[in-house]
Structure formats: structure tokens, C-alpha cells
Image 1 (cartoon, rainbow, N blue to C red):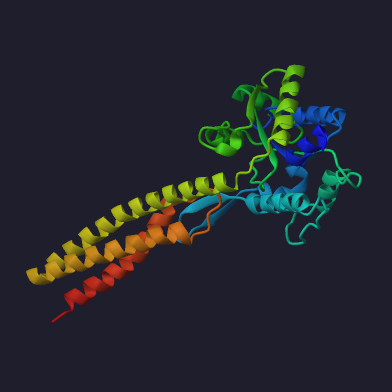
Image 2: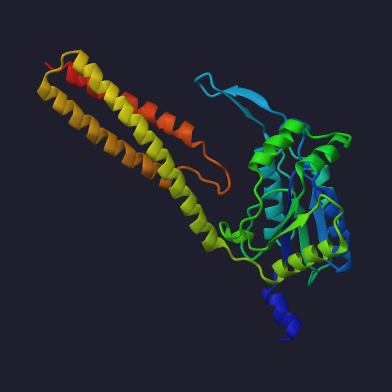
Length: 335
């Protein structure tokens, strides 16, 4: 086996390079320069254009009610995003056989075909493949992965955005400022291959060189994060379960206090009060144990997707309140 063949055995066949930053931070400009430089390296590369793949209406917000007259703003973006990522996964996992776009996905077939045009390459040993994504992506094992975070001041992003033919609403950018986080390898092991570029000014040739070296390093050192991802997901799930159970416990304590007050106001005898307190305490302990077990083993959990802890705890408290009412009614009606 030659040295080149030995390297190719451990080298990843593809790399997913995430370009993250605020709208108008310069991601599209950087992507075009990476494509040009990748071609000079003999690599196959493409940009995954969400704006073209996902229909415009999927980005629009809707006002819905959650059943208790609380309004939430959301879009259909996530379901369409998952469809795009599914197509990429299928492309990578099935020896780069161009997958059919599911008819129910809602994403543009023409845009997908254009995105992957020319990526199939000749039969036999194929040059590395680079996907450039303006997104967070969850990837299979033995795949190169890296991130380029474009640091650009808010004023510049807003100014550049306003000069676009179809600018992103300024309030959306302001909201993204609150949510966007730079890569944190200490917290997330899959972000170890990450760099930050200052894109307030013009991205330099040396910046492009840093990006190409990052991609090359990711290709040569594919991350096998199945185990790490599982550990991280389990840790996130445990943290979520603890938060939900803690908030539910506080709500259940308040409900028990109100139930005891109701029983006293209805002149429930002392011995029944003691029985009521014991039953409610036991019921709460069992309920919280089952709630914790439910979140640890049964609730679907996608790493990176936030669970509304407050809403989950509130719903749990409503369920416990139904059990509490039955116990209270039984004690008060016990002759």
C-alpha cells in the first residue's frame, strides 16, 4: 500500500462546512470564494441554498394558540430544513447516488438537482466532496465536519442587508443576535474544527487559505462522534428532565398547599387531614418519578432542538392536579 493509499483509507470522502453568522455577515460572498478555491484544489464543492430549496411561505410566521389562549410565533422552516438535510444524508450514505426528493417535503426539486449537479464525478476514486451549509447540521460518523463563524458587527449587517433586493426584516436580525452563538469546542466536541473570521471588512486571501486548511484538516481527520454525540445527547436529556421535574415539583407543591387549604376550610377532621397529606405526598413522589422516567426514556429528543421546559412543566402540573382532585374528593366524601 502506498502512502497516498494509506492516507485515503483514513481520509473522509466528504466534508460539511457550516458557515454561520448574522444575515449579511458575508456568508454568500465567502461561499463563492471557497467554491472557486476548492475547484483549484480539484475538490467537488457546492453550496446548499436554503433560500432556493425552501419555499418562501415556509419562512413566514404564524399566530397559533396552544389551548390556553397563549399565542406563539412559529414557521414551517424546521420541517423543510429536515427534508433538505435528509436529502444530503441520503446522498452521502448511499454512495453518492442522487436521491429523489420526497414529494411531500415541499422543497424545490429543480433547486436540489442544480445544487448537486456535477457532484457525482467519475466512477472509481472520487475527489473530496465539500458541502457548504448556512445552518447547523447533524451528520453521520466518519465524515469531515468544520465550522466557519463570520464575526461582523450588527450595524454593518443591518446596513448591508438594507441594500439587498429582498432584505431580511431588521427585527429578525435583532432576534438572531440574541440566539446566535459562536462555536464552543469546550462545550460541544463536534465543534473542535472551527474558526472565526472577521467579516466586517473584506475577507482576505489569508482568510480563504485558513478556511481551505480547515476543510483539508477536517477531511484528513473525520470525526467519529457516535459515542460523543450519545453522551452529549444523554447529558442534554438529563438536564432537560431535571429542569422539567424541578418546575413541576414546585407547581405540584403549590397545588397540594391549595388542596390542604380547601380541606381545612371544609372542616375535614384531623385524622383525615393527615391521611390526605400522606396520600398527596406519595402521589406527588410517584408522579414526579414517572415524569422523570418519561423524559429520560420516552420523549423524542433531538440534539440542538430546544424543549419548552416551562410549557412541559405546566402541562405536567395540570395532569397531577387531576389526580389531586380525585384524592381530595375521596377524602372529603369519605363518611
